[in-house]
Image 1 (tube, helix red, strand yellow):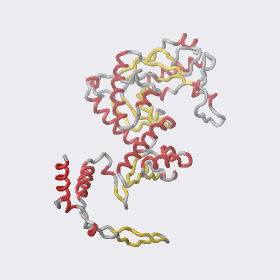
Image 2: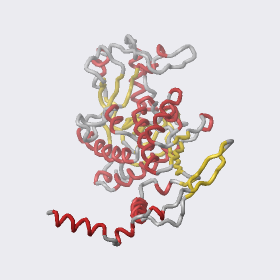
Image 3: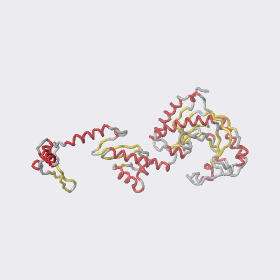
Length: 394
């Protein structure tokens, strides 16, 4: 063993390629420094010989080359300014206050955790975007992901702006029967019921989904989504068959007719419900894919089955709603948001008119409707519409 160890040590001491590659003391030069001025102060900067060839350099370069080959979704949208990357991230202006937070605490935390800097436009600029800056692209991606999670969390605090509606008011016979129903009920002077709680017949509709579209970009994205939906529906077998609803009966949202806030009519046939649910399944998938609605928001609106796997839209055409009551308005006619909803006892109303028949209505189209804007015909202003069945079908 001693002889073998001696031979190994002798071999290591023998000059060879490995020995020549090691730096010798006489080959090491003293470090050199350049003097640079920054502001009022002077600093020494180490001068590095650019001709030095480190063996690890090639490997390091190969590593970065591999990193650069793996382009990510937003790489082509980033620009290099100065010594850092910059990304313009579309974010509706209504979310900016959440990103900044009280005393800019949210912004500071996001910047500290991601390593990126966030530039938020001033309120008066009304820009639906923010800017992320960082020396590394990964820092920008990290900041973007955290901002998206924050906005998704804060979305519940925002008001609805639009909704997807199936107009019913285009049917003159339906409007006439609903108006007759309103006059008859008002004349009988039920407790808690006056003409102010009735939905105007020119606004009758089914609602398929409420939406929060707080920027022009989101509205444009919604229009494109409906174009895609229209093409998908046109390719189904149902598209060749007319879509009709037999509007019959009075219904309430709860099981207690003595404590009612909303009265509606609908068609409860399984055929109509299944067809509208199939349509809604396609629609919800498109909206989620484009980031226009979140799964949790659909759950909150009660538009999905209990397991969240498929659509279960509750078709209802509102006839009476106590939130429209004069009692809920101030002296200037303003209706404050929130507050406790009034209710009334609808027991006698349901007993006398529970089987009222409003007739059959064609469900011709789906519209992207503005929640608080009306068109000249008295219905909600439509931004875009699409047919629900082939207009040539009868």
